[in-house]
Length: 318
Image (tube, helix red, strand yellow):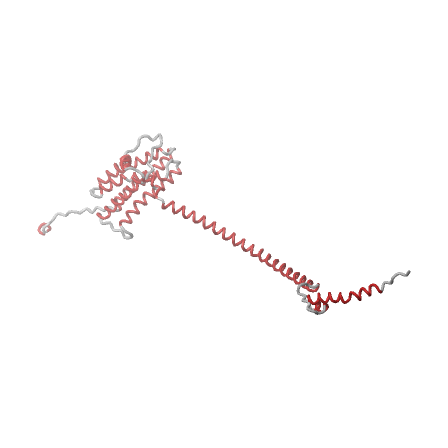
């Protein structure tokens, strides 16, 4: 019994199934390609759906170049950013400093403006009743006797300022009635400058001298004390400018002017410690105050005395 050989079976199977297989493949090809060859169809297929190794390499190279370019651009931008950052920081610091200086200057300017423009600051120095001013005017002519303790000084400027303006008006009246000629300036300007110059100038000088002599007095108190001391000057000049007698002037100069001067001297003595300091301070104030009254009388008041000659006839002269 011999074993069947391998050839006839497969061949037969292949021959028998060749037609049927061909027929099946043919139907498949007809359905898929319309009767064309499978090899031709694979060659003619579009290859855009995938990418080859060459394409991948090109894409990788391109991406690498783009990354390098982006890296270089980023480094350049960082350098520019650092440079601009330094400049921007300097500019910002400059703007902040300028803004701070402007704000400080603005605050100082507004503070100074409010200091000089706000009337409430000066209100306490002018908040006084007329009855109090009248009482202080009378007190300015009465010297105090008690000098063992500091005498009270009114810290207001309404009464002194009104007395200075009154003295200006009286001095202007004396200039006009005596036909005083002012070569430089006007009568009004001369009167205001003389009266206010004495009040402010002598007050400042005596305050400085009081500071050196350890006298307990402020600048406002000194202005008030000297201002009320001008009340005697106003009375003396008002009377002597209308009644032209030198003897009357000297009487008023000694009595009225002397009383107002003694009042100021007594107040300063009560506020000064030390005999030498009292002598220097009070002597200076008394001398300036009395000499100022003499100056106002003889400088801006002229009395022309008419010398009467008896009428003589020609026969009498012969």
